[in-house]
Amino acid sequence: MTLTIALSKGRIFEETLPLLAAAGISPAEDPESSRKLIIGTNHPDVRLVIVRASDVPTYVQYGAADLGIAGRDVLIEHGGAGLYQPLDLNIAKCRMMVAVAGEYDYEAAVKKGARLQVATKYPQIAREHFARKGVHVDIIKLYGSMELAPLVGLADAIVDLVSTGGTLRANNLVAVEHILDISSRLVVNQAALKLKYDSIQPVLDAFARAVTA
Ligand code: ATP
Ligand code: MG
Image (spheres, rainbow, N blue to C red):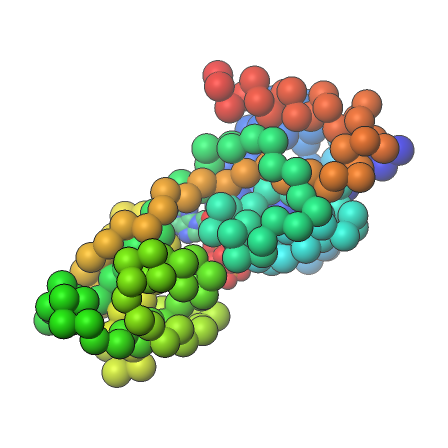
């Protein structure tokens, strides 16, 4: 039975390679240099499909992939329907933060009950965060480069992933609130886990051992 694993290029692919190796799986090609979207492995019955990071849960939910690896950010925005999430892989770690322009007084705006314009790629996480704080917001959905929004008057604040803080600093932004710690998780199609248990369980076990090692 063929096992299909959905991965995104870049940091998730790179940080997943050691986990795949622990499960005895090595990709036949490098997705960074290959234009192929389906990549074989040393196992004739294991293949990788290369998709956009935010599309991984969708491929797994519908069973087009049996397994996938996706960030907690992506999984919250997706909602998790149809997905079993057995393992935090502790890779691609970063933090979801609220950030504003250096000269913007966020505390004062919140204190006086101002309605904030918030630009983000993560509307679900942003909405929940500000609802919990009791702050009224208009969410402005963006698909990239959130850092620009406060600089050109599109938004008062952004909700974005931060790892080193270098991009914020380079654009005179400051992080004012930590929302969530983010890492990537293994996701499994719930039906596939039952139907392909014998091929999936060894991969889960190998990943789990590699994560704790
Ligand atoms: P795309 O680049 O297709 O718009 P993306 O930016 O979400 O999507 P990646 O940059 O590959 O895709 O990020 C994949 C996952 O890695 C994210 O969902 C998040 O969980 C995590 N991540 C994002 N940025 C960082 C970062 N700076 N450091 C560590 N992990 C990160
Ligand atoms: Mg990115």
